[in-house]
Length: 161
Image (tube, rainbow, N blue to C red; front, side, top):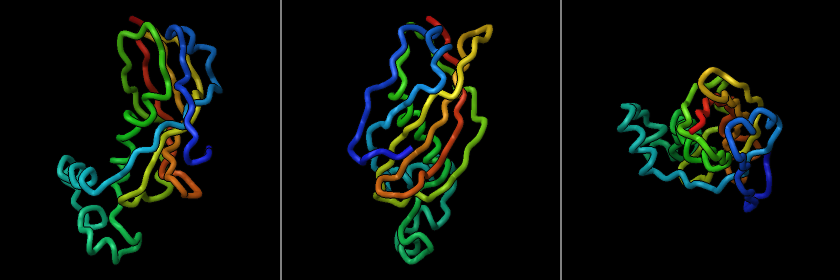
């Protein structure tokens, strides 16, 4: 799923939620690069009460297995909203609801100072009684890395407005 570091595409745009029904295979992204700094990692640690030294002890983490503090896996996952959200634009939507994930795998740690971005595709879309259930195959890429930080199959419900 990798592309050149500065490449960026416009969002995949749909005129209505119903137009998603034929969208399987549509490419999403890549999106903008997003820097992971220590302040964000520390704020996430405070919000989740996960203060493991590999995340928040800068000195100890520098001497540890990753050579620097790393972002929490769940921090990277939570950034999908900000990173993947702009990759898909659908007109006529009342709301989007996070349905959950079919699969999430953490493949590579994200060290402090790294830049990440989302890229992926629409895997499927089906009509429900409430709207269109969309499954996206997504990856969070790390700039300069050979493999992504994570891959996820994200399920959302798009409710027409």
